[in-house]
Each structure stands twice: as C-alpha cells, then as structure tokens.
Length: 349
Figure 1: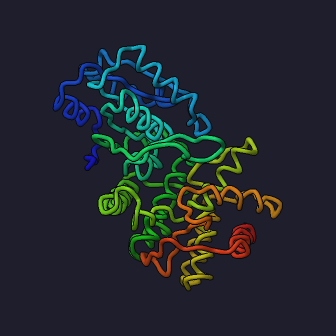
Figure 2: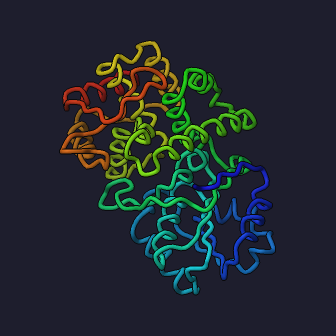
C-alpha cells in the first residue's frame, strides 16, 4: 500500500523517506517547467547533491513512447540499477510516465511521486496507475504499480496558473459526485475564480482520502474503483479529439465536459436528480467554458469511445449515478443517447 504524506515541507519528508533505504543512486525526473519552478524546492537536500536530473518536454502530448524511451536510455546511460530510486517531480504527465519507466526499467526500480499540480495531487500520482499515450489514445499502455510514497505539498500550487488549478479541480468535483452531498456542496460553492489555497488544501485532503479508500478496496479496478472513471469515458474522447486536431486541452477540462455528458446519461438512464445535474453543469460551464465541439465531431468522438479500456464485449462502458454517491458501474448507453448527451453539453454553452 502506497504511503501518502501531506506536508508543506516536502524536502524534510523526502529526506526521511530516502534515509529509510540504502539506494545506490538517485534520479529525479522533471519536465522543462518543473525543472525551473519546482526543482529548487527540493534540490537543496544534501542527500540529493549527487542526484542525476532527467528532463523531458512538458505537456501531455509528450507522454509518449519517445519520451519513455529517452527516460529508459538516460537511466541506463547514467548507471541506474535495480537498487536505484527515481523521484518523479511534476504533474500527471511526469508521474504517469515516470512511474511506468520505473516499473519497467530492469523489471522495476523504486519510485516516489512528488506531484506539483493540483491534478496530479488528487488524481494521477495516487492510486498506482502508470502509463503513456499510444497510437492516438490516452493512457493506452501502462501498468498498475504504486509509488513507494506520494508527497502532497500544496506549496507547489503557488506555481500554477488558473487553468491548471481548474484542471485539477475537475477531478475533485468528480470525487464529490461519487462521495456525498456535503462534499459535493462544498465543491460547487468554492470560488474557483479567486481560490483560497488554505481552503483548497482542506478540500484536497478530503478528495485524496476518497480516492485512497476506493483504490485500497479495489486496487486493480475489477469493481468499485470504476467509480473513479465517472466523466472519463466521454472526457477521454474529447481529449483525444483535441489532440488529433492539434488543439490539446488540459485533462481536467475534458473531464469536466465529460462529466456534464455523463450526468445527462445518469439522468436519462438512472434518474439522477435534475436539479443536481443542472447545478453541476452550471458550475462547470461557468468555470471551464465551452468545449467547442460541433455535431460533425460526434462520429469521431464515438469512435474514440469504442477504444476505451473499460469496454466489455464491444459495449461502451460507463460509470453512472442514481444520486450523489449512489454509483452504478458497468452501464451502457446507445449511440443515440450518447449523441443526446453531447447535445446537452453543447446546448449549455
């Protein structure tokens, strides 16, 4: 079980974690942004004075086989062994790709995640999913393997712009929808335009606990962990289409728009309350803006959905809700209903 540590002093925590084991060498994976803005937070540690830095290009369109191959090559060229440690310092792209690289290099080396974005804190770095995008599809290749530890340091949120705060918040909103009315209510009442980081930190702790509890009960996604996919079947399709069009969108924005669609499917198929659907959709529309799709995109989006990893027996598989926290996994929807959900998304914008 991975250790999740919340602290505003990631250097001290990291120092304690490193001294527990006798690593023969330490490597730090960053992207171009986190090398500049986040590495100074931790590289003052004496234990890291000989650490080797591996830097990859930023943004999700670089979460690919080429970047992964470069990390493997750098680890090999700089003498990493099965007794080495890889510290993944960055957003979800870095923790996903770095976790996969560590899990497969020499059949697996130890790794620690230090997420530096809100999205990575509440989603990518926790739960043991690692991987890369491949063949135009999100997270198509990867493994389940948890980091030794995840350090959640909200100090890094000061380095983020409002778009990246919103991107992570979409996953928190999902956690609210699959948990309880109180947390959902807190989330849709939060002022995302002028976020108070202290208050946000409290919401993050609750959000991570919701995910942690679900992952611990179903680490390999055979049952209730599928609840964490709410908003993602259509969200991943929207994200993939944006990549195809060379107009990539942040993951959380796609998930937010996918959440509107899948709330509509929840309403039509599972009688999810209309008022809560509209309240949530209004919050998303106000804070995330229009997704910009047209009805000409529907067939392509549907085709992307047919490649979703959760599908079974040729059926597109959804997690839907009958109410806040009342989850129905392994649900299907007709093509007609999916297109109606996309209409509902467009009508609100």
